[in-house]
Length: 257
Length: 258
Image: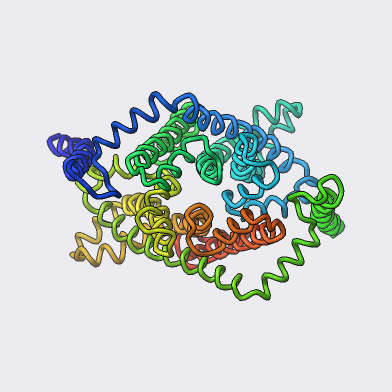
């Protein structure tokens, strides 16, 4: 009991202590690279909460959400077709695997040259880069569906749509979710990269611009905001995943104990 | 047999169709634009292979990615074993690790570029930062996965701390570390490219940036093709070595068909 209390206070105390140390150590800092934390937070409030919320923060988040949503829908749909229709699988397999090897950020310059620097380029970059993890996970998930499940659904004469929605989708669900989580990371990275490469709007562009003009506090404020978004998006996904896949999480826990 | 032949034909047809579509778009509707024809890209690719500068930047990329990965592996496993072995350490770092883990290294890229400038160290540090956290987290999980009965047995036979660590804890954490390394190796390559593309560090990333900025589209596409092949090689090698090195572990043993 006592030990638990100590562990808990360690868990909550250490991060607080770290932030306090950062605050205290940087309070009178004149180092250009590490401005006082207080100044960073002031700039954070001034930049992100008021001035640029509508023009930059919302823009970045909208691109992220829209691009990611498109990527998952297309990825799952294309994954189903690829996994279930042999001819499509044979034809697309080498292409999918080739695109999987390309670092997603390396595609951004190509989209810039094809579409320009606009919002469409950022949206297309995010969508296409985030597509592949979900697509590949969906194909793998459906390919590894237990054959006896297929037999049973054949015996019960389930229609095609029943089979897809009630057998394949739940059976491949955990793998699809894992792929979607990787996709979310990729979408976030490409969101930042597409803004850093020659755009003037968005959180990534603002942060890089601040760095290039030596406005260090503004740069730190951007890094903080991006960090919070990255963490928040992942946490949101975890919560949603545990809700949707509650049956799977529960069965895993049972089989472990 | 017949089915295999048909599969081969369809696969070849798929690749041919994709290339044909690319060539058609580049010479037809989008001729003279930013999309180079397949032929020009392949010619550029052949030109690159004869170019010393290309091999230098390829070598830079590989050295940065592998050095960063190796440093991250050593630091990650050492820290992971420490954190995993001592309960207070684990609780103290839990929140910090969980907060930092989903944050990709590109977020701190501006800061790292500000401190190091567009140098090899900058790219190297970014790779290290991006790979070390997942390795720590996985190692901690692996250390905790050690079978308590085995640990108790070892203790009652009077094995020392280091012996338990070397003979029980580390071997049972190996598959976790292996998984982390398999994921980290392709990531190291990606981060090196990002550091070159956005931070100006040496390697293929900055070659891509220069090709795009200078409008050398065949060069741009040839580099992306090279990166695609390199990425596949990284994924393949890391998966193969994981299986080779960990073949003794229960989760990798293959069941022979009866």
